[in-house]
Image (cartoon, rainbow, N blue to C red; front, side):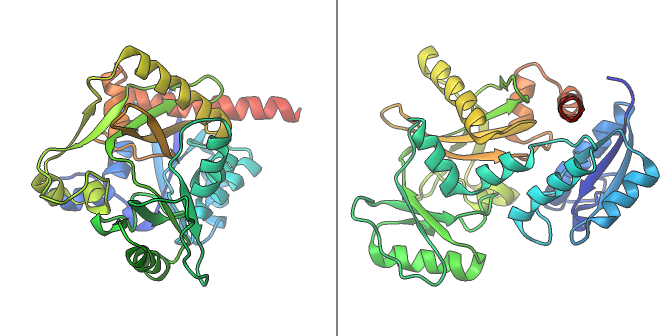
Length: 344
């Protein structure tokens, strides 16, 4: 790819240092994505500028007008402290007609509303765990058809925020207790879905109209304590010490039949079309013990640090990290070009 001028949008608190020397693994874990993206883009010959934004859109417009980047690499996972507001940054970038990486605002909106996405996917006859939504200020009444065990999550937050071993409940009293936790501590509506006992699978996707499905990846737990369930809690996702303690491993999913792999790949493409996901995304499944892949959620703009599932899956597919970032940039530029054609 030719040398590009790339403006990288990040949360101000996640501005990475020039080097990781002197930092602990836990400290690096906080800003590893920003560091990996910036250092790799620069090593690939691109001219890179970082911009930390969180409460105002004006600095984005000012920097684009003054520096004139070729493309914006959007690493914002929230805006104004709200995950759901991240889609508005993508909308703003579209309005000022600058190429930007990641998913379009419509795809972000559909995917991040877990109830909406599940309803749409279920309509297309893709297996989805039974679920119910519990809004703040309303009494918690479990529908009779919703059977225990259930796992209770935030309706809109991602990165496993609010998910712990206590999220899996077996009684109505515990359901009420956990829903209250989500309402009070996370500040969002709660979704309770049937807990599927099985394997945790992640499938990365690259592409706008034509999607390239990456190798199926699996999150495994080699040292779970008695009574603990293999779920992707907040600690599993972000606490390095806990990952080591519980033997949290990620790698290519093994012992899947060719037919099952083909089925999952096909379902992933259907999900992306249904939810209008482009750029890069990750689809999460729970593979039940009887071999049914249940759709859990879609993740537009997933974690792309070099050591995380998405990048490692791409590497397993023969795509180096530098090439992966270049492909993401290329998809942004191609999408912007097609949008310009439509407006002419």
